[in-house]
Length: 150
Image 1 (cartoon, rainbow, N blue to C red):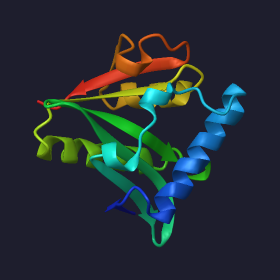
Image 2 (cartoon, rainbow, N blue to C red):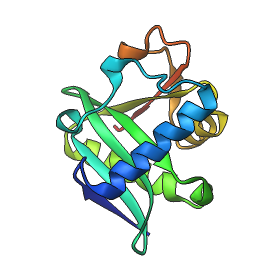
Image 3 (cartoon, one colour):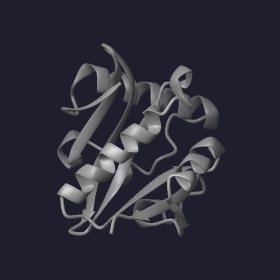
Image 4 (tube, rainbow, N blue to C red):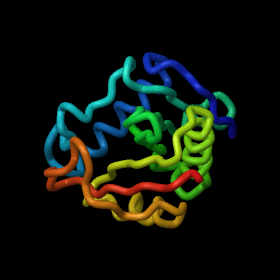
């Protein structure tokens, strides 16, 4: 498996992001649980990564700057048939390495309240639960985490 930086518009990444949105919409019964102001766009994503198994795209994740010292993990997703195989860990570690290159000392993220496997994953990877922040402060769906990179 290789984790590669790609543009936000790259088709493999776009397809994975759409699969993530479709899965969340089906789970929650609504097309979007994320506040509109939190929805990432190409211009506000500092880096976007896609994990490949050979030529097959199997997962993705991006970083958006929160401030001069912190970033937010956005659109973290691994195809259901590849979960539990190390893809998520590879993507998160690559994102953390890039965050350090940007000079950030912490990364934060939001996941869903109906995604206990995601919550367990982040906790296992050293993320700690924090109060909902920024765009997610009043979201009934949000569960937020952060990890120090120092």
